[in-house]
Image (cartoon, rainbow, N blue to C red; front, top):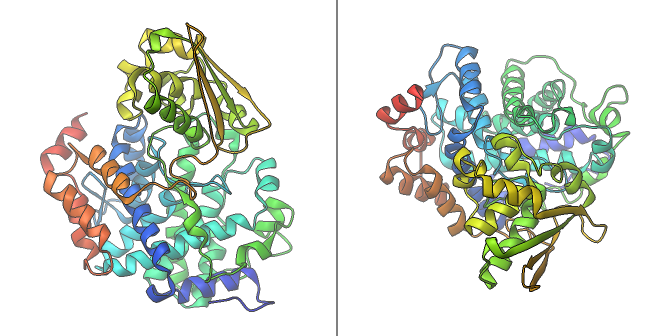
Length: 464
């Protein structure tokens, strides 16, 4: 699977994605892909609680009038509609995966088109596993080649830019593209690459993810029709992704040890809803709460030190407005954890985040500031009590990161928590079992049958 020394980057990745087979995947990569898939499903059923979910459902329903594809925790939509809506569901409540090196959510772009095509064509779940691996690996590798600091300095947001390539790769894998068709799919995906941080602080950043999924789906389906497209999109001198988005990037990084080291293993998961860059804060606070009995009423101050980037993005929501800003707020996460000893979607219900005591605590007692001694998602936290007692800790590796991963049992419990009341109890356990044995489970259609909500639940959801 190693790339030829002088092979053009787009073609090298296309050859990799087109030829990737189950036996090429290390066991660790296979198992991580299963966790990514199950986590995406957990996020999707939770996403039905998103504030904008109904608006995106209306858009998805209007895309086409077909009903061949299943909605996770819902009914059926068209191929395009289900891809777009499932992508939004996965990211709707801000607890899906992230590739920290590129600050890009991966599964919202990769899993929905994979499920839609595999269900449509009645493909085996083993093929689904390989396709998701291909899509995750292409997305993350294109991302690491972008020279992220340069890319980010220009204001670009990864999911809508590199996500379409991974979505195209996963569909191309399922449709058994050869390297030429895959390269054309990448050219068509790149022609739709878009999304900037001008959208930050609004739900539009989540739209980047689901639109990336749909873009990749369209790219692959058009490539399947032998549509003419450039086969050298990434490094083209005039308008290539790396030259246009990252001043040339670091293309050699995208193919370093390709097929021998799997970058997808670096994709991190989140146990708790709230933004990626404050997962270290969450981890640190739960560590303190687990070791000490904290009476929030006796807390004088909570001192939170974040990286400059995390502070810039999440340190300004002491007075948050609504659920989405609460999910982005370091102040609110600290207040909720110390008051409730938990951080689930229950803490992001309006009745909870609008509680006057929590609002006052977040705005008046939580001090968030940048600290040069921490980077990325790292955090330092000190809880100072009224009697002068201090509880302090530092988190270098947030729970869910490569260095501090979630266990499969934790991912399974996350799915159980949010699927409860959406899916039948028996189906919840059957989905967990199916994902655990994707190699042998059989039909993706059977899996999707279990992931649709029972008809009465769908009717209730529609009424709401």
